[in-house]
Length: 412
Image (cartoon, rainbow, N blue to C red; front, side, top):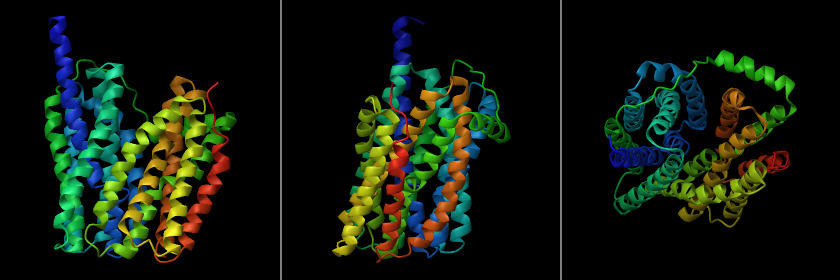
């Protein structure tokens, strides 16, 4: 193949990858695991299960990450088909959730089971997508594609939600909320179809299959010998309430407005807008000398602002206004965005390259367990929809994270 032909082939793959990633992001935003599924679950009265939806998804994602080397090894050069399969599996899980919501039976066990399955598929998909990108695009184009697909997917999700808002006034609230699951399903199905056209990869990277017990054993050995890693794990655990902020405010909103058509669509618009706002914000902070410390301190600050705004809204009886919910959810989404980037930066500063995956996996297990435990508590306190004290508790937890964030590293 000529040089021009090679460049054009890569450009064509960029377009297909961007389209696939945009549909995937749109589907995941419209059926947001942290907001939409908990809201619908709470709408049916299963508030405790609603609080465990995102923790269940997180545990599934860890299982998916640990399974991905085995899956990718078996797929050989056809790794794009892994993207197709995971997108379709996730779409099928959303269909199951939608049918359960319409029927109104078995909500808790079905939503929790499908959340784990969604997490597993998402974990496998994330690693497969990274592998495909490495094969199809150079480093600069990979970075551009990740940013562009996130922004494009969020914009499409916003436009979709905005377009359906005018027709919701005459709709049953439950039906209108479940519509988001059907729209999310359509996005994921489209991502699966487009994924077929990505084509086989042309390089085969060897990847050692690591079991969870190996990650735990090696991570425990490093934790015993490295003070910085123990400090890192403690800070990650203290930021779990901030990571669950979107879920908390979604449940808090559902307690008051679950029977109002369009409320959930406004939350979807807010979370998507949060992704668009957060990307350049955290990108800027990440490039400064403050690095992980700056991101975590700012994240705790933004999350605290969301809690204060919610408290003020409750105090002046403005919490019933849709725009108030939207701003709070937007701030919670922006705050959550910084945590993973800051964690990765922290690990990269201290850990040797061959240790990074193990340490990230080891800490992720602890965070997932803590997320599940706190999620159970979250479901209990979020029931105080018209009270200020549940949000005060969240605010206090955010403030506790402030001094912990100051222990994060900066760039030399």
